Length: 348
Ligand SMILES: C[S@@+](CC[C@H](N)C(=O)[O-])C[C@H]1O[C@@H](n2cnc3c(N)ncnc32)[C@H](O)[C@@H]1O
Image (cartoon, rainbow, N blue to C red; front, side, top):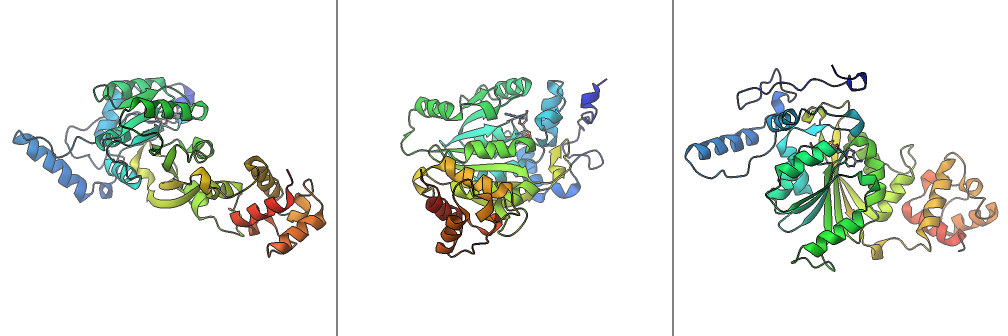
């Protein structure tokens, strides 16, 4: 019997004997079994039959994921957002969205059974994987123990000293020039830590060039496409654009995960700006504090909500001088407008 806290769980479905998933049992509907997937599988089987080497290393799918979980008697944990990717083609697309190639250093958050780790390692990358669940960390370490290109940390990413771990990885890779080389982040993260992960990693443009994440679709759209004068426009949009150039890559329907979440997902790429490219503000702390204060009382005009910084008259004057109405509200200001306003009214 499962404890009641785990009652949401489906029992892992049995693994069908046939190589083709049984469409009546498989969480993947038939449209996800693409012709390309079938072509690759057929090619592997054909090559194996003639004693040739497979054209491509085995990839994870429905069967591999369930087998890995069954082998350790693991049930996906809701509290850790454990929704495993069943479609190897999506992992391929995630890795190619980040342009991962031979010799790259990649941080993966939450490797789980290692389906994405497998694709990253097959691309020739060195992978630093941070996994909070100690059982999954053991599973993934054992699975790739022979590669010598994977380091697994059993830690919570939010509390992890990412910078020092990446720096020591750079130092341990002889051919890597830490002055010029940057790492990448590629991960299918639990939806409930997306904001924490974004706040942690986006300001690290000095060590990462790109962060490619599988997020909840709604979050992805809010981060990338929220426009001025809409209720979705928030301080996080200013934050994301301050530190990166975000791009919505593609939608990933919920049917690609086990257990199936209640929402769809999407892949977003954040190209990180280098610290020299950040907008010029005297203090980033006071800049983001101004932005937060402005949005705290979203319906209020800035000349009222920023009165703790200077007088309404000074705020009106500053707004006029950057061609904005003295009655402006926060959702009417672009990142550039906020930077100019900050530099005019905040005296350090
Ligand atoms: C959505 S699953 C993805 C698993 C795997 N990458 C895949 O694509 O199938 C999220 C993974 O993140 C792990 N995780 C959850 N919270 C975490 C945290 N705070 N830090 C690191 N890993 C975490 C979970 O244990 C799980 O393995």
